[in-house]
Length: 151
Image 1 (tube, helix red, strand yellow):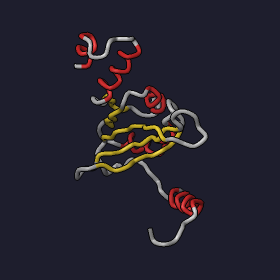
Image 2: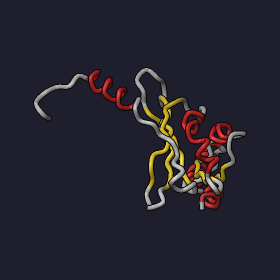
Image 3: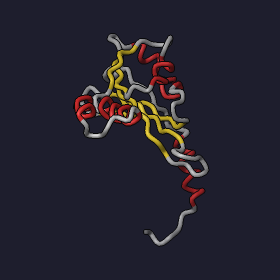
């Protein structure tokens, strides 16, 4: 684009250098309300889906969201590193922290015994995951039972 080439390792080293200086965590000056989610990231040499990018965002008092945590790790793995730096902030809120989640059970294990949070299951994930369970149970797609559950 600019008429010169940049080696991939130069970009990689720059990302690692800048990334090591970034520090993500919840802010006690913002709302005690956040969302978490994970999504697959393809990685060369790792079969199937690769790794999972895990993100925690926090609602800001003036509107919008801010990134409060980011981690990459195994699927169905620990969320400990994502919440690690924010545990004391969660404890410091005057009201319980509300966490909107997709229902990943390993999130609960990462927080259990450390903090008490209110969990709200993401309304998008309920019918999405219900369709998967119906498929696993061999329920005919768009059949009467399928439509009743999904509706």
